[in-house]
Length: 443
Image (cartoon, rainbow, N blue to C red; front, side, top):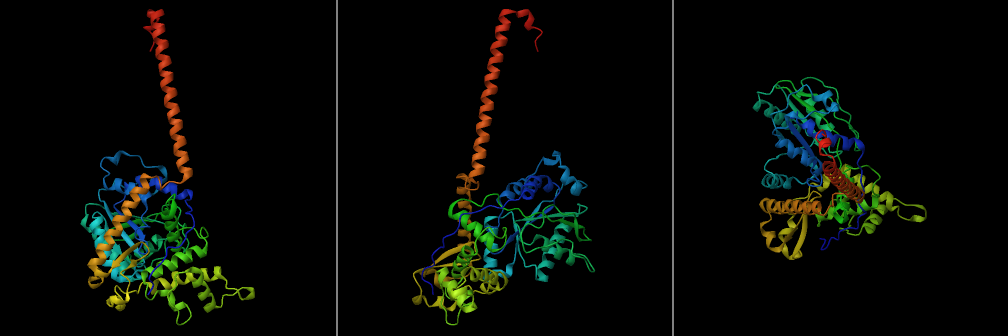
């Protein structure tokens, strides 16, 4: 078993925020006025990192929209949604996709942890390749429509980060909810950024009437500063949630190796692709050497092609290794023999939740303890987000400079206006003294 798992060095965070993402973010408040249900999709492997803070303000405003009915809808939105009155139904469902890529033992504890920290959000786990998951989600939407029978139809907006499976979900829901064969309505891709505009309405159910809109995936405009921003970017790159090529494969492979070691420090999932008899490895170059040797990935002179090995490792994890890693048990049998363990070691679930298990906790390592550890992870995440927001960590240096420049220009304009007003006032007073009769007619 690994006694120490060092955190890898990661490249500086990059950004990918095409214009269509900014445009949709600006349109969102108006779109939400005519939305009954928001399906917010996240990735089960990144349940916290795939939260989009850029959408949070609009969603919170939607929950308390109050007197916003007098707002004007932009023309670009009117063409698709203006036929509906402002919605009175308001339900938010957070759907965690790809549940088969995280250990099953953590799903219920995480669901309870989310309910304790975010009581206003309904949480649903699913995999789009599981028909019963799609059927359960379809039934959930139909149930919302039936509970709000006063509304002639239910309109659902699907939002989330890029490449979390929004279009695939809607195609599956349409196929499940509409009787008979249905053609694929939305294009899908393994690469992020295919959907660039709000889709036309898709009918998901006939009785009751349920419609849905697909939306562009929205990436954070800036991933953050320092180690936090670097880790956030690498995580999103690993799940193909950010444009391919923004990160080098060796950095992604180093972080992936670290995470697989955290998930199972006794028998990491990658051991099955290394030479027989291999033990867990923490050094990325030692790992790539072993993998390249096993796969025969050699350059001229018999040198291991590390870049090729790293790319193969990432591809394996996305296609097969994620499923293998998800089979990690809650408490491997070796954990019962505490004499073979260090005083404390790291455990985790997905790529966002990581905690320490000490010697005292080994004897009661069950799902209630896991729930408590997950709640602590969520609390730490929220605290870090608030601190980052206070320090301006969510803004790039370019954006900070622009804000400062705008403030400076606004301050100068205010001073100039005040100065101008003073001069006019003094001039008027002087004119009044010199010619009081002529001042009577001045407006």
